[in-house]
Image (cartoon, rainbow, N blue to C red; front, side):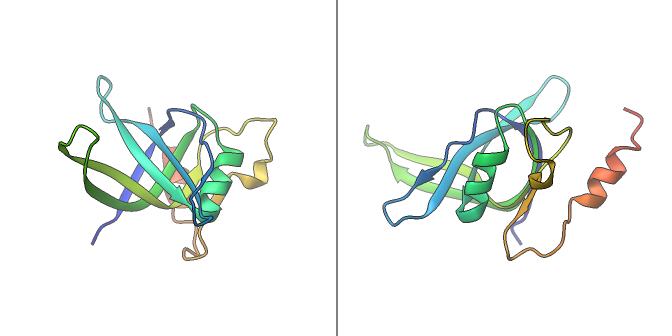
Length: 132
């Protein structure tokens, strides 16, 4: 089983790109707070409607929740050295926290057609009751 769930802030504005075959893709990163002193920067990749939606509704600094799968790719760099890259391919994401008043509040939640339920809703409701 390969399921990753992360919450963090976008490190830059999501930039929508199109592959040579016409598929929409966004490659960006989120800052995930591990402890008060340690933050991990995790590369994420979104495809199709998820890519299009995140590029329209999110910006640098927005807190998002993501669920996806972990990938590890190996390749040879321009310097001839073998390299690896690890990242999360996002299947579902949700913009969390306060919404920007200049954005449509109805577009704060986005999901692929493969996922019928809002699985993060319970997490967000529980979060409001935490004492910190």
